[in-house]
Image 1: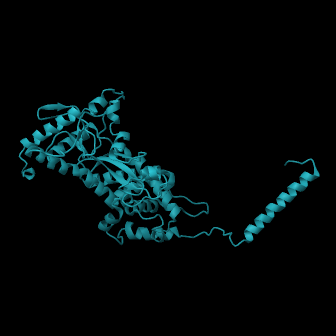
Image 2: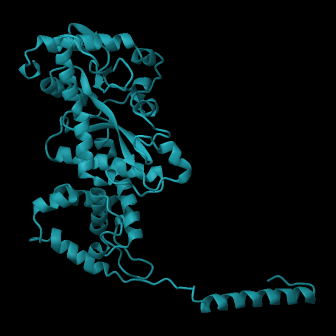
Image 3: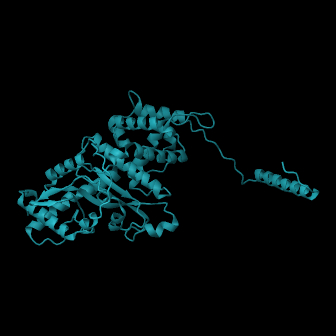
Length: 407
């Protein structure tokens, strides 16, 4: 306690305390003062309803309806709940500050999955799950972080040597062209609560609202092998490509061997199918913009049909996880990135669960010491290789008997 040395100081302190006390009393008596009202949401009742509807021995709704609502089968959902509860304290049952039991892991995971699946506001299921909007919003963030940490290494991995061999085989069997790693494209995700100082940067004329672009590569089974999201100033596909890490493993020398032969010629790297906006890289194959003969028209039809793999992947991703189709309410790009990557991982998990994955087994490559390669960029930008590769693929397609591509 500080002792003052003068009576004037004591009187000043007393007057100050009296003013503070008067202010507190006036505020308490004011009609504008409203103490926070606590709502007993009866989370135990919500748990009982949830279990009775879905998770008892004879639930109210069957497996088919569960798949429709949760976008996955029940065994997969319960496995996710079990893994998350075992590894993350937030999802483990405890008590809150009032001594009441917290929400269980199955309640929190249900809230997060339903938000991802529908894109509805966090308080949409308050009456059903008995969970406040703030808790639902918080749960979604923690759930997405948990999904990425637990499953990201396997379900959002770059193709390994084993994966490349399986992808080459599947694409040659399906699309009749060798060396195809997949298709690449971008899509827009609308940002509802984009801060005002960023709106100009993220608004494009043909959309009229702030959006962030998502770049992915996808194979024929709709598995997404690469995803890059949230590039600043991402106004078109080229800007996103220039900032993404698609070719990071090529640059540091850790990429698997993707070489192949076509039309008797050797190529060092596999390629992606693209639309007309992309640059003429040696690892991109575009359709002929103005085909002049039967060979070029035949290849154009095949390339455009095969490139729809990535468009189908976007349709399946946004159709299953509608949070990506509706305007996102998060205030930061980081949170939106969590939602996007968690949705992609769950998308790939469902593909594997349904037995549709080209490479369902994750076989890792032996560890390789990164060595920065200064020769990769000139090879990537070699326009001559781009044209020669398209020519050789055209000759390869023409030499095959593909009646569905004939005029």
